[in-house]
Image (cartoon, rainbow over all chains, first blue to last red; front, side):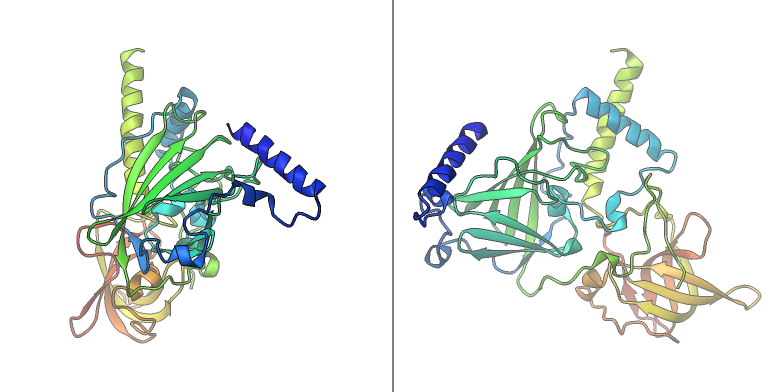
Length: 254
Length: 136
């Protein structure tokens, strides 16, 4: 399917290059006036103003069943756990201020904020001062995206639900501590308001090399209209650096 | 699959479930280096208060039994978390005499993680959430 799409995109690109006078960008052809593509249509989107703080009151909405790992990754996870008994793997690279990237950047104990502009939803994330850009203008994923921490995200609205499709992650992002991902990780999020000022995010992670079936978790964020996203520069005064094997440390020199 | 393997597999799945539910509760780093099961009280004079990310830090001189000041370094929650819970960068300053409830470092060095600060007038400022809840 994706192959067919990229062939289509390529042929569109080729035709627009051939007809150099044609001012229409290739991706315009793929559009069907998506919701949120103009300032006027943004006014009809749901009100997600304010900032949203991850809700731990029930340990997330549901205690997720653990992912069903493939034998190779189950063995890796068991080895990871075994090493923890010897003081290794106490920390992940976030202790060294490396941002977690997707999917874990969406489950941090700091708030996030959604910004709607035509054709794009931007998520400002307080933890590690990160940003996600979700293109809602009808474009497809690039055929071969450069891997990034947040991945390449395209989205569309299904009524009041934002559906986000993300691919293309750097190797360092984790499904969970001890569970890395392959080049086939694919994440779909369905984000919508639920009663009592909560935003619900249902996240389905698919990675056939790592998990035997897609893994879905559901989390909630609580709205705080009187909060702002604040600065979080992790390297400002990080005294918790871990060594490459994840041994924990604390620098107490003043 | 023999019984031992099955046991290992079940154990790993339970551990993964735990790891997943615990993951979300901290950003940045785990509390592996601190004794989170026990709290100790140290009392002394603040010498420095770092209002910085990813963590605040309280440096405090604590007199030992012989009356000689020992230098302690105590990690705290981030300013982002604390300023939403009543703290400011002026909450502590050098010269303040306070008691700290801390989770001490397991390695025996004079450091730990701050749970709360008790001021001379009895006022308590919480650092870790004092209700049952996650740490950050």
